[in-house]
Length: 124
Picture 1 (cartoon, one colour):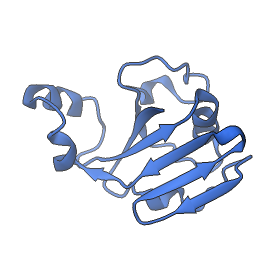
Picture 2 (cartoon, one colour):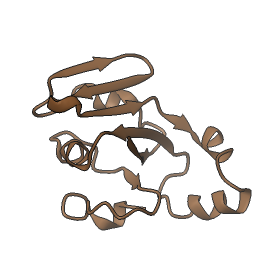
Picture 3 (cartoon, one colour):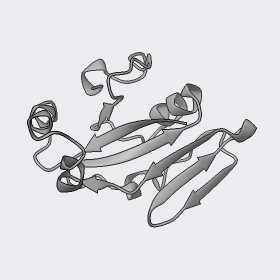
Picture 4 (cartoon, helix red, strand yellow):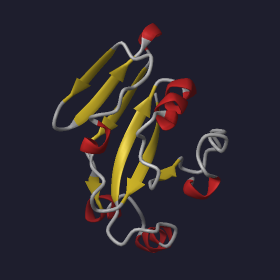
């Protein structure tokens, strides 16, 4: 299992993804807390309910959080954790028609090679 965070403005919620098609998916399971997309070979992408700034603040050292917030173009951001089984299903999600184009992607400093599908300025 691997993960990233998608970060958007105060209107960014799990519902932003509920009407997407998810090309080549075999099963989509939606609940109040997560959206799970299943593919062949037990591959998956799971998006979890958004977290608010105060919830995420506790995950950082105070000075590190302030520095992190300076990288974001949002006054009151929301974070959605995305777990995925492999990079190809993550790339598929990020390439989907209807994927929000105004979100930041936090890869926790890991270079995932997403620059060819997402503007590099949106990757942290």
